[in-house]
Amino acid sequence: MAPDIPFNNDVSLYLTGVIRTALHNMDREAREHYSVVIQAKDMAGQVGGLSGSTTVNITLTDVNDNPPRFPQKHYQLYVPESAQVGSAVGKIKANDADMGTNADMKYTIINGDVSGVFSISTDKETREGIISLKKPLNYEKKKSYTLNIEGANTHLDFRFSHLGPFKDITMLKIIVGDVDEPPFFTMPSYVMDVYENAKTGTVVGTVTAQDPDSTNNFIRNLFLNSIADTRNFMTYSPGLLSHIPVAIRILDVNDNPPELARDYDIVVCENAKPSQVIQTIGATDKDDSANGPRFHFFLEEGHPLNPNFTLKDNEDNTASILTRRRRFSRTTQDVYYLPIVISDGGIPSLSSSSTLVIRVCACERDGRVRTCHAEAFLSSAGLSTGALIAILLCVIILLAIVVLFITLRRSKKEPLIISEEDVRENVVTYDDEGGGEEDTEAFDISALRNPSAAEELKYRRDVRPEVKPTSRHHTSSSLDSIDVQEFIKQRLAEADLDPSVPPYDSLQTYAYEGHRSEAGSISSLDSATTHSDQDYNYLGDWGPEFKKLAELYGEIESERTT
Image (cartoon, rainbow, N blue to C red):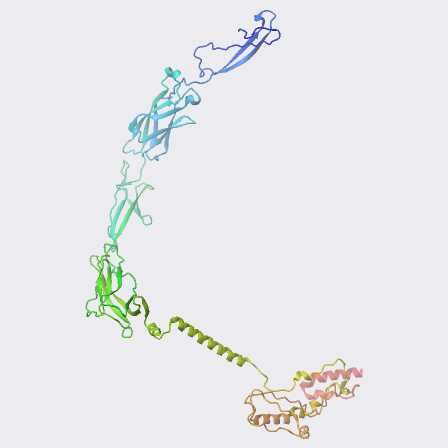
C-alpha cells in the first residue's frame, strides 16, 4: 500500500487500500457472503511499528446469469369435460436460480393449434404459469390435448448472453375426462305460431334434443314451464336438465267486427247548405291490421233514400256525413237518425251497423254553434243563462226573508193578561224578626180575607173584546157569606159564559182564603205567645194525612208533662 500524503509530524496520515477479487467467475448462487480481515502497519512494517485491523463483509449482487429450467420435460394434467370456461384447470412452474427481477419470466403456449382452447398467464407473486380454459371441452369430440409451454426471462443481461438461451420448453398433455352431460337442443331457440281460435290439443310445433354422451342415454321426460315459456329435457340420470326458450305467437283471426272510433256528437246548423260536410267519422277494429283496415262505410240497405243526409266513403278509413238539402228547423224536428254500416278488410269480411244521432242547432254565420234544443227559445226571448240565474237568486233571497220574518213573529211571546203591577212588587223585605200573631203591622193579611181584591177586571192582550163583558161585581156581604168552593164554581161559570174570552184555558187569579176551618188555624199567626193547654189528640182522628202533625204535637205535649 502506498501513502497518498507525505509523512509529517504535525499532520495525520491517511492511507487507502483497494480490495480486489482473487477468484475468477465468482457465483452468487454458490456463495453470496464473504468476510475479509484487513491489517494496517506503520514504519513500513519494521520492528517497533504500530498496526490496526478491521473486518470487511462483502455481499455479491445478483445478475441474470442463470436461465429458467422446467423440472420435467413432460407433464400430464386431467381436466373433466364439465370444466367451466374461464376457470383455472392447472399450474406449471420453471425454476430460476436468480432472484428479484432477474428471475421474472413469462409463460407461452407455442403450439398454436390449441391456442383457442387453453390459455396461460403468469402469477407475478409465485412465478407460476396458470392454465385456463377458453372453450368448452367435449370428451366425445376430443379426448386429449398436447401443449408446448415455454418459460422465458423478461429481463436479459447481454453480458451473459453466452450463458443462454434464457428460456426453457416443456410438454403438457391434457387428458379430457368423460362426464355425464345433459342433453342439448338441435336449435338455439324455437318460434312457433298458432291461431287464436285453435282447439285444445292442437299441435303447435316440435322440438328436438340429443344426448351428447357416448352412451347416448334415452331422453324420456319433457317438461313445459308455463311461467318462463321454456322446455326442459332430462336424461335417465336425474338432475341433468337443459333449457331452451320457445316463443309461441298467437295469430289473429277475424272475429271482431269494426265499430265507430268513438261516440260522435253530430250537429247540423239550421242554415246549412246542400252537400255540406257536417261530420267526419272513423272506425276501429280489435283485430290486427291484417283483419282490420281498410274499412268501408255505406248506408244501411233496405231503407228508403234519406232525403236529409248522405254518407261518403273517403277511402282512407274515414267517411263524411253530408247534407242533402238546405235549411233545417228545430221547431219542426230537432233530432235526426242516420243508420250506417261499417265493414273491415278481413277474410271473411265482418260488418256492424250503427245509428248516428244528428242534432239541429242554431249557429252563427261562421258556423259556430250558438244553442240547441229548448235553450233556443230562451235566447229568442232575450234572456241569457246569466240573467236567468240572477233572477232565480233574487227569488230565493226574497223567500228566505219572508220565512225569517214569519218565524220571528211567531216566536215573539207577550203576557196574556194586562196587570197593573208585577206580583213581585208584593214581596216585602225586612230585617226584624216579628212578634208572632200579635204583630199585624209587618204585613197586612186583610187582602187574603177580602175577596173583593180579586174583583178587578183583567183584560186579555191577545184578543180584543167585541162584546162588553158582563158585570161580575158582587157586594162584599154576599162574597163573605159563600164558601170558597162555591166561589170558584161561580167564577168558572162566568168565564165559560163570557163571550170575550178565547176558547182556550186561561189563568184565573183568586185572592180569597175561604171560611174558617172547624179545626181552627194551625198557623203561628193565630197562636198565643204562651203555651196553650189545648188537647191535640183529635188530630189522630183526621186520617193518615194528619198523622205526622199529630205525632209532632204529641211529642210537644209529652215534653210539657215531663
